Image 1 (spheres, one colour):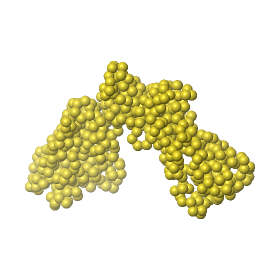
Image 2: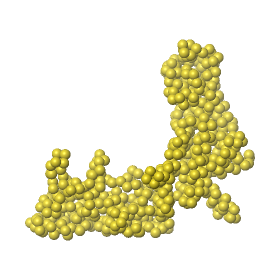
Image 3: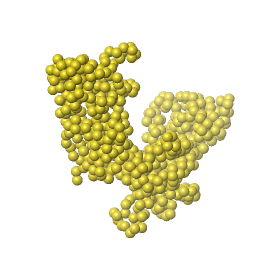
Length: 595
């Protein structure tokens, strides 16, 4: 079935429907205006009969219900509250044209630098008749008093504040383009000798606007929410993509519920922000509205699935657990209200679980996407996640996702499968989730891990820290020093300068195998020296004074082979530390690696 039609409509006809409210905007559209130069450029393009792009409209009356509002500049009380069509793409062009041509009030626009201004637009008739290439110079904008001023507003350079002044100076107001009767009557009265010149202008310029045809793509009322969302993402050229959250906000608003207030809060309506409550927990500072909606959708669709089974449905009749876009867009308001508070608590419990795994800051988290199934699972488990057997399984699943690097890219399917399979695993020890069975870590992967932004890199770093790694110089464990805001970073164990001097290529010495978290103080003392040299320097420092055994204990806490390091044996160190790190990884994943 075709979900759209394409046609053309005259500009005057479109503007008439906009000013009487037959064409409006969906309320979720974030309104913004073009600057003064954009508006003038658009008017010039139409005056020259240049194409300005297609407009996309959507027929109302279907299942997609949005709150609506008139185009900026048009009062809601002056138009119908039952529009026939909504603007999906072309808002800025149509708004600019409606304000500049169809309304007598000044256009609310801004300067190129963003300063808000009000402007009326005019054509210099005589200049416009010098040729199409002069139209850009012929169109001007004046302030809300229909004047241009200089000398900080003290001197009037051009005064068009009355119809008489417009006619005498042969400036044509753009708000007379659709119907110029008033201007023409005044011209006959105040400057009849100029009427012939005006008629040439009318034929060359005004008629270009009146006969201008805009290409229209119109979505039918049968179009689904998912399709509307995808259309917005593809065609919104104003730099602001429409999110799933905004679509659902519009849909819920039609049922009298303000989702934006619930998420962002409102001082006016004294509503607390759910997002701010979550952000009060360090590990939840990056949780987005979409993450929250996905978690609720998982629980709603899971509940729906078991209701289908209880109702005797079988096979494809049983609707699946899902976190896909289409499912989120179909999330009923009742389901949001049913789960929102519980899911918020689920996210908070997720942050507690992660802290137990030694994650303390948001930047350390390997995957933000893994928070969604984790929070949904903990919503269902409640306090049960602390039970040793349940916790062990949950941790194994989490580290399998991180170290198996399974939560990068599109993960909507895995998110849904993990929730189902985790809950089954908690009841049946033999029902191991696919994320756990699929996860593997090739030892060779350690050699290619060089970016600290990769999930596996972050995960391995935290695994080292949670074993209690201490700093080479400062007294204290790395994680403790981090909470005390001591400057820390991940540095080379065999320094870069030493490696380059000894012919070791960057792709080898830059891998995670040759890196560990230490303080800036320790790193400065290491410099570019060989390990045997910098270890002696560190140990003999007046404020350190460590014997070999004590320093070796610190190095072992970083899974560093001490004998190889002290012998400056890079290749032996590299292979042995690789094996030590693999042991750490295998322990977290609960399985042997590929060999």
